[in-house]
Length: 342
Image (cartoon, rainbow, N blue to C red):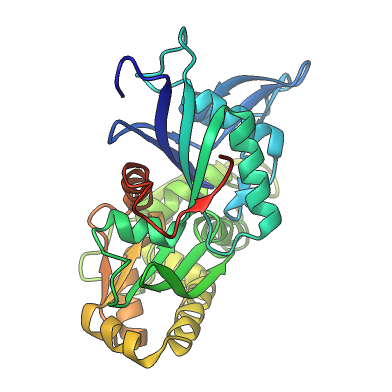
């Protein structure tokens, strides 16, 4: 940002699990999408990494909120506080000059007009004076280096925290678009329920997330399997401590139903794809991104299901954010950006 500029330009990947902010072409904020709020006056006391450890701690004077659920804003006021708090973490933020903010923010491809208005309003209240929106699959494709305004078809499956976005793109438009509320959070809930029923243990969602990252799998047979993970938690009946080793095969079984649902949505999207673009996709393959792309064996399972090669993005956690940053640099040249406030 030019030191004499009165406008600060930022790109935001507003995610259910994490929010990433790009400024001056670099990721400057990468924080959990959570805020901690004081009960006595409803004031935010922490955001992101400082607020995350406060979840599920039983603190009587504060409560934590994840403002986004299933990819959209579930708590408008908390989201406004979170966006404002995270913007204030930008190292280049010049508080004393209080520059106007030009934002590009990504939104789920299945967001309704009402949900887009809520995102618009939250960003406005958080300080945006000029706002553009980009659909997440388009941002992901940009972040992976694709020319989505060209005629060749490109298919992206973005498995985030709240939604899985499945899209076929060509000529700067979403030719096929499916957004389903099955993604990282749903897989975490599968693990919570399995540990409760299968091992008689109560665990929190953050613990389920750690299990998923360490031993989560889409296949019961892996060439390079992760070691078992020992999970510590209370017995569901008597609250005595349990130490349970958990294998990737167990987690593969408990995640199978929702992964099958993602497979079904992908097959439906392929069935809706025009034949010329379908041929492009068979030749290029399908590209996996988002945190869910890191699940052990997922690309292999989807390749076996569709017989089309699935490729995991080089940087799946940041593809959408990087693409949103590219859109910020090319506001005048990208026809598919959605105008927010002007």
